Image 1 (cartoon, rainbow, N blue to C red):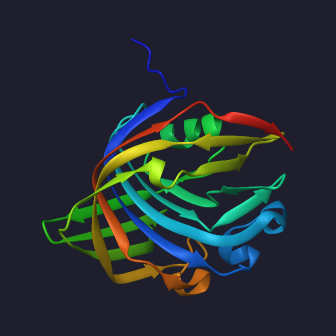
Image 2 (tube, helix red, strand yellow):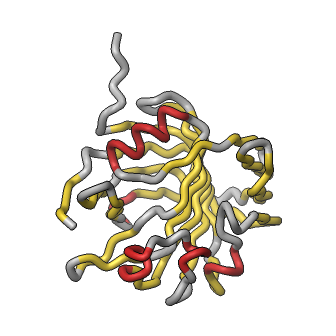
Length: 216
């Protein structure tokens, strides 16, 4: 039976959302911006996310991503992932192909118990990111309808737009420690003065539909 790597993808797993209010101006090297990114960036709410996908169209994998904030194109605001690592070569290949998401391959260590989560991420045997989080246990529902997000990602000759849909059970979490080699992934202090409470979501269910296409 041939695997279906094309969109839509249905994913299940658990993850951490670290929302923040971004600086109005983020230097290109800190935000991992192209010249085009810098010209479109307009600040606003961004997020760092860490995800453990239990199931997907390409099987289980881990993910770390950075959304700096809003990008304006033709008078509309979109979100954009400017840096993202995953643990699956298939996810790299088909994430780029299906949605223009600039995935890179990395190695993940994810340790979790009832009270905390420790994650380490390395590339070419060099650790570049680590985080230690404390879980809190007041549950609440999460649904993408409360805060719809549309991604605008770049391919060679066009933009790909994706409005993903998801739901899950959230819990607040707090960051005990956060370390990042800024040449690979942003340091917290460089991208925002204001970090909002973290959210640990377990489980979540997510659908990435077929991307829309816009001419540049």
